Image 1 (tube, one colour):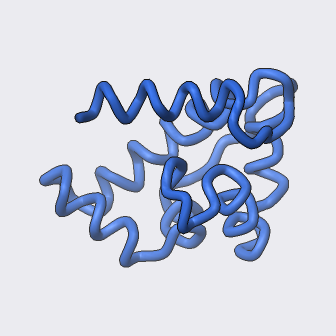
Image 2 (cartoon, one colour):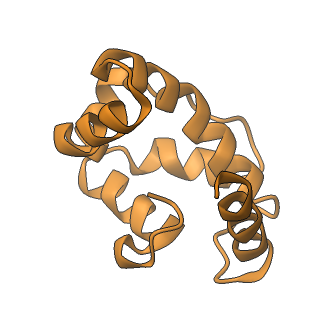
Length: 105
């Protein structure tokens, strides 16, 4: 989701959340303030059932488990990738994503 250039990376993910009425929540993860929580049902709404289903199949988990995990992990990932409170093309985000890709194979 985050590293896929076709989906627009972090900026594309922000746009997706905005289109689903969850832009304020996503923006809190980017900002330097407190992260707003997101529920598993909000994750399913924002990302779509098909995306969650694909993640669940790849991970060998239930849709509910994946939604729960993403609702906990995504705010932290976005927060760590945007330490200055904004989404930058390349830079630290690009380096972090490259390192993550190498770790995941």
